[in-house]
Image (cartoon, rainbow, N blue to C red; front, side, top):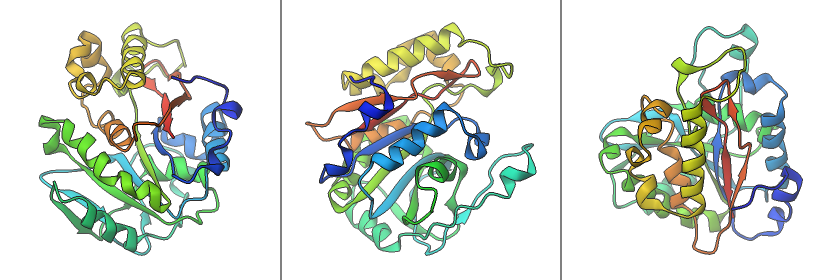
Length: 274
């Protein structure tokens, strides 16, 4: 496990032939238009990465039932899937092109689950709020893959999907999973107070399991005890992490960044697999 400063953490990535995979804690939608430690780290990641051929995003904000969808459109729309924020946030657009050719490759690669094409979605804020900083020119094609909630009954399916998608890393595709390791909106402290004890405990325990590649434990998060129930009233923001781990190769390092908790109950902890 590596917990270096961002400059040291991302050094040398651009020289690697295989694209990394990422899990990013996306947090507050306002981060799309804010400059803070989290967004500066996202920008630094974007500068350090080899230039992707395309970005495949798996966001906690696109949940489906009974099937996994892949967006095949040429011009994905910017989705403002939130309410009660300033007008400046709703004015944001992320005009990246889609990646229909990569979508076709995904459908060919993933034979173990029902994967179907979609033309209605686009880019939700779990994707574009990050990419606005990581690739501010919106000059890399982007497509999203949904998370089938029905697979949560056996979460190893999410790992398997990540493994099925891993060959795309050798084809210049950046796999970006977006969620939060702790996500309890009801327990947020808007004054910016310290992390709740249970949030800190769950974040630390999950980080240790990620570093140890303890996939059995990560696929059964109830094993983390009472803190797990408080950390995730629902599990939608946890499952994308398993896609990123599934895409890891045996020789990859796991490098953590943005390893802190925002507003008491939102873990911003992120990691890069390379």
